[in-house]
Image (cartoon, rainbow, N blue to C red; front, side, top):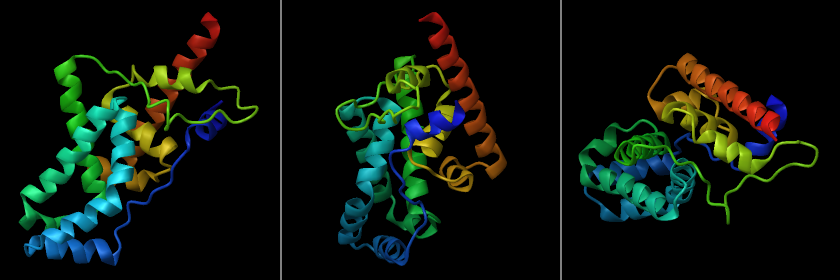
Length: 193
């Protein structure tokens, strides 16, 4: 089931590795060049928005969380020089923003934007994408984020660790615990049908 679940989830494969363009633009942003933020936004807003959308399940809230991440970057341009991995930093800001939004709501809604980002059900996988979406609702935020990054975005455990600001072994444990819980929940759902 794990292999089929992983195949059902992977839909995007952005890299968090910074390139020279990010390094240059971060330096220019730290130096006060406002066009650098625009270039950074153009390069990174789509994957950051997709991550926020998967985490929040609401397009408007995802847009707000994405905007908040870029506003935080713009609000402290001197810090930009110290950012090691721009995409990882932006995703961490979004993840923390999601956690804050969930605390305000006192619940964890996980519906995905079904019109665009719903993972396709591969032929023969036997896994209902809607059941996966619903099962994600019950995972702790950190585990859910690790599962989304690993199986929707195909991030390595090293990349997940960078996004979450934890050790690689901890990232692996979060993703594995989240995936195990997800499998258990899906098995319960299948048994109830």
